Length: 99
View 1 (tube, rainbow, N blue to C red):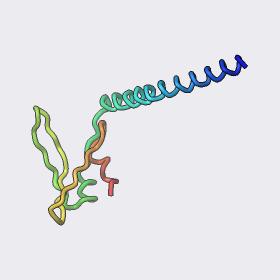
View 2 (view 1 turned 90 degrees about the vertical axis):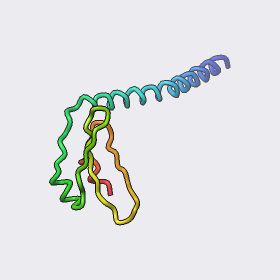
View 3 (view 1 turned 180 degrees about the vertical axis):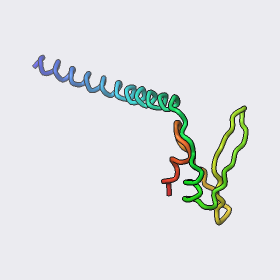
């Protein structure tokens, strides 16, 4: 009977170890992928493609902390507003498929 208890203890220890290690692995992998996206060369926004998809779209830009922030503004039909933000390493072109 003692061998059965030892085996059960080993299985329990393995499950606890996996439950503790898995979140750290997921976090480390996510960090690695996000960090790599910051070093990627920026992609240019093709204004013509934006205008074809959103004919009323206007390009806007402003300065913040010494950086130029650029975006697109599309007026709505009522007073509501929707703000779409791309992820790190992305640009406004990534949001064209959002409906």
